[in-house]
Image (cartoon, rainbow, N blue to C red; front, top):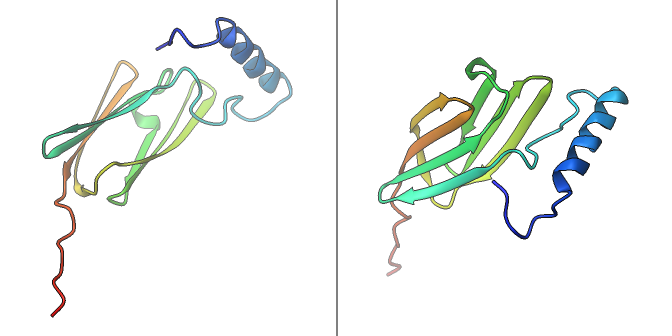
Length: 122
């Protein structure tokens, strides 16, 4: 999604850079999430929802890992590779994760955990 503050020629230069990388034989051409990928995190009560655009990727090319604080998204498809580590705003139960992928959009939800308890020192 573009923003009015974006450079109107940014997409052209990004595409030229990608093509130059491919011609130079650099593997994948795109070494991570680029301008075409957007990742959003939403806190919805006791649920945390992450939405990521992964254009040109098939469901089988996606690998997700979470340690409760960070979600790592690795995806590969159409000659490009995406790798992104998303720091989550709250600690989550990684075992509660549910993921869906439809038309290039990945949606992952987690149950948020309670903040750490205060311990009184006597």
